[in-house]
Image 1: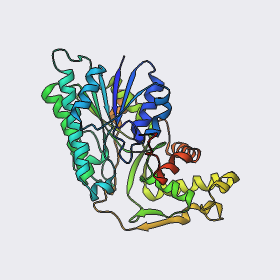
Image 2: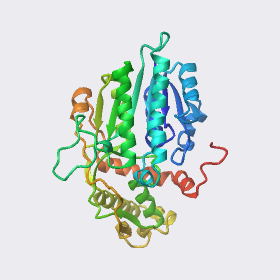
Image 3: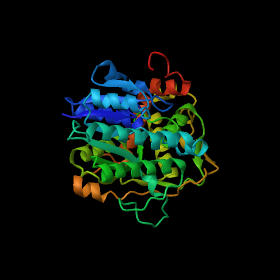
Image 4: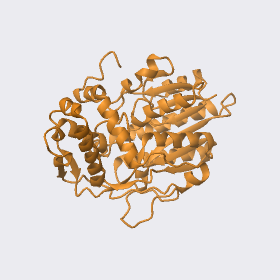
Length: 362
């Protein structure tokens, strides 16, 4: 039986993983740790918390004593580490918090894992799985080969640099101390519970409420897109079957320019509004309710500093060794994402209103 400590558990990917793991491994024990910063939302996990199927702890991964006590007192044998500051724009404006959380926080977890698992009375069977990003590899030109696990690191933003540093620390704790670790570097995720500063939920909600869709530069920045549940399934495979000390690139086989992502999103919303008059009543400020297409809101804005042009994942290793293949195409995943946000208006309205941190949730 696994006893998991999941960090960043109330964030976007973390909360999806908690639900995924609970559904798939009902006898395992789960402690969900999150400091509930701006993108951590306890409401994401309330169904599981109120049902008593997980234990939620509010706290920082930088708090050594807290993390040590959680690991030792609960005989944790698996740490799945999602907690991270992840928004590039925020890292450009305020890099300090990215160093604190992504570098110092990861090192704190590794120190706890070493102390708890590698001593005489430690957990012989243990695993520290570290979740990272393809942004550590830098930027590709249009005709460059995709990132492999052997691609040299070349981070271009404070966010990417902080994640690169954390990747190296995880590797070092395996090589130096013998800690059982695995790592994954994933492409852009999308799906339920994503904080609405990211491209897809930002533009989706802006269409619903009738605000402009801000597109950096010419919109031809290219990313590989992966539906979040497929990412969760890949992590499960790595935890169960991955080789200690190895890293795995996880991609969705959906390399698309940002402008094409938004045009696909607009097309889905146009279709949903035209086929469902109730949406026009619910969202009267949307252009889709006023005989205008959603794409009429597209607004090209000045590009951000150091904006990487292209990321692309070569995921042949995880496909060959662990037989991972994404289930969702970009079209099916995007449809599911749009439906989730439409059907969970209270969730995102509470975030837009700034009310989800009330005393009943924190």
